[in-house]
Amino acid sequence: MEKKSLKIESALARLEEIVRQLENEQISLEESLELFEEGVKLADSIQKKLSEAQLRVKKVLEEAEGFKIEDFGG
Amino acid sequence: MRSLFTQIARQQPHGPALPVFTVSQINRVVRDLLEAGIPALWLEGEISNFTHHRNGHMYFTLKDEAAEIEAVMFASQNALLQFTPADGQKVIAFGQITLYERKGRYQINVLEMRPAGIGKLQLEFEKLKERLQAEGLFDTRFKQPIPRFPERIGIVTSPEGAALRDVLKILRERYPIIEVLLFPARVQGEGAAMELAGAIRAANRYSLTIEPLDTLIVTRGGGSLEDLWAFNEEPVARAIFESAIPIISAVGHEIDVTLADLVADVRAPTPTAAAQMAVPDRRELIEFAQSARAQLKQLVFGRIENYLLRIEMLRRSRGLHRPVQLLHEHEQTLDHASGLLLRAMRERLARHQERWQGLVRHLESLNPASVLRRGFSVVESEAGQIVRSAEQVRVGERVKIRLHQGRLLSRVEAKESDHGKEISKD
Image (cartoon, rainbow over all chains, first blue to last red; front, side, top):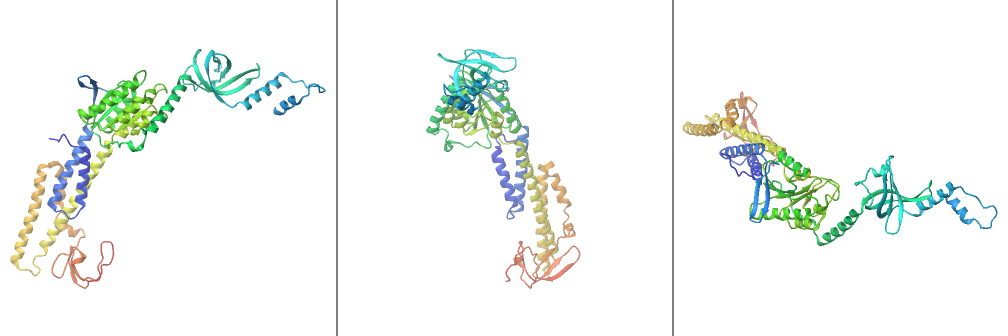
């Protein structure tokens, strides 16, 4: 199940961080495999999310009782 | 021609043989006097007797309550007019006062003309601009940065306009991951300024009470100066200034800069450009993710290769002046370690069959013996330890170099760091 709340910005930042950590020789093999797994997952989910996204457009009208929100075909 | 005029002026009334001029000559003189004496100017008046002649030129009269002047606007100039002149219309005209020599009539040759209302608007605009500037509404210190990775964007514009179509098209192409909320407002005509200001405020209330908006685009497409006018009105400027949501403003075309543009956090030349500024391009982000993924793979494979190489070297070092029992223990540990490694890899592979297939192929092709065959060699110290750093041996110490075939018994003559610098002798 894809996490719905994957934020592109933090995912990109984390991916960059993982690459940097793996470049560091000090970490253990076990750790590097974990990072590798996390990084690949992250890269794939960023790509999937960005390629498959569909723009959602809504129209917002402010009325006396509050906001009225309608789908907007655009 | 001047000299002819001087000649006339100098004539004595009773002098002998007053010269006789032709009509053409004198009209030429008067024309030159007018053109030289009165620089090009702006003239305000009402149009009457307007005709647009077959030859393309426009002939009309400009008048006020007490006086009239003939006017002509030639085809090459009137082709650029932004409006259609008509009788009764008040205009301001820019041109040169001259004489139509054939009729001996003086007139203005109009080079540029605008409806007089715009002139007044322009004046009011300049005054308002000065006032808002003095108040600091355009100050850069109030400009908010536009978030690079927005999640929800508001658009204040007309639902029917071309501007909205342009913006949505770009957002769809570049970054469709966001949610777009349209706050409709008429963008021209009576009351448009109040609607625009209202929609900007509504967006801010929405952001505060329902869900946050990262960026607000306030836009409309190109149009005449009057069409864009609502964006020059004070309520719009104030609403933009007060907005807690960063605002990108894009009104009209590149050349039109409205007060809304000056107050906004960022001004975009067109609606399309506004959308481009509002979101990153997903193609670049995908490219980044893909290259990071490839880099990760390379780093981890390199590490595994190294590890296998070390295991193999340790395995080979058994039997070198070591108690047999210790060797067996050592061997067992190694087997366990490499077994663990392979099992760990396989477990992951089972979970990510597809992704890891490449890796397993790679791993299994990594027969440790082939590492030496490929030209790597291993250096052992006198104590029988694998040498991984120049720090481990002394100058003068004997070392053994294992090759794919055979060994070399060598002596360390000098040591260098990775950068080729000699390490001080120890």
